[in-house]
Length: 303
Image 1 (tube, rainbow, N blue to C red):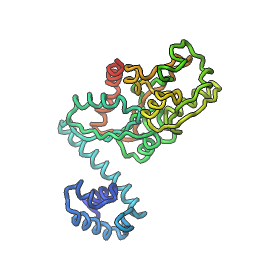
Image 2: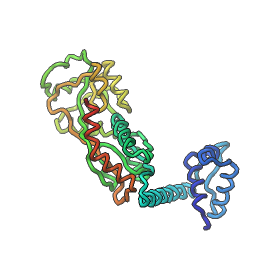
Image 3: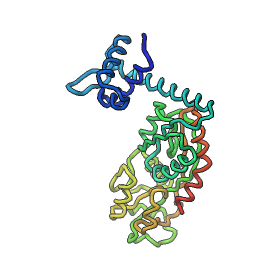
């Protein structure tokens, strides 16, 4: 096969967008030029990479395989470029970081501090749920992930960088507000607004109540922390959330932390990446920064 890096770059963009037009716009090329390169790539491979259905295109089986390899090749080339730039003494590069939705409550502060110190390093941030974070680690499609409990089904390197305390929250008019040392068993009488199955908070919550031999009444189920806080404020049930997500609500008196025995549930945030992955120079800088500076950001944010 006579495949060029340029063809793979163009193909990767088309496959990612599933659109010749959007890929051409991203790469500042004309659509005919992109189409011609893709046809030449298909001719060289001897297989069709896309199939059309009306105006829509999708990847063939061969296209999916080439897409996987082209992503890997592009990552390797980007890493090589960053390594070579670092050897020139240049503090620049690009990092793809993915974070759990709960982490995003303090991640902007952390990333803002990083940008001040290393303005030449460009950060691309993806905020998503635990399931997708794990898939990103499996695919090795991001440089690093900031999340709760590292996955047990993926070979990863991980380091704790910040405490994550889970507390029981209620609206300020709830009858348990102001009560000291509420027995855990008392929570069995309450309805809880819960995160979706698979989320780190949900897993920690279920593990905690199982250890205390309690069966909790589930009310509404939410996929976002903001929705849980709104539901708790509306009186639809109690919630268990990270203290990082409720700073504003505590300051304004919209939510209250209940004084429940054996709470908070003590967890940690972790910096995670694939086992055996060679961190680029910007990646090493970011890792060191997170491990040393996150506590300062946490203290600033918690006031």
